[in-house]
Image (cartoon, rainbow, N blue to C red; front, top):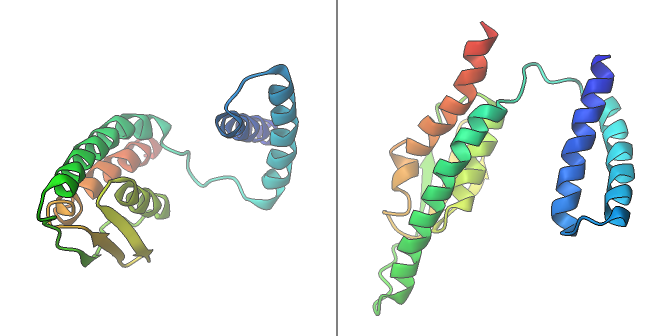
Length: 163
């Protein structure tokens, strides 16, 4: 029964991705997407073991609005830099040692940095992220640990629920 539940969850997740990619909800797109999603979920079900713990969807839903705010704030800062007559940029590569141990948390941290205008995660290992920043202000939330603290809270809810 657990396998059927995982199959349905995976199918639904792939179908949602499909609908975003296709960009329309017609009967044809929905049926084709449902069929493809089911086949891919079936193949994936037998290739990957069940997760050791549930994914923190609630924590992620609370994190996304904060991240959107950071993206907007950083986008405004980048606009200011671009429109400045002297283009006051100071590009730099910043090694950052994360405290997060969870691989999903590290991936979320790297992707969050890359989504934020003015920064890109150039390399990620369990011990270090190498981040390119257009200037020191763009890297503030990363260097001071704000991003990592927010992401730690996302995964903390799962750890608390597991005890």
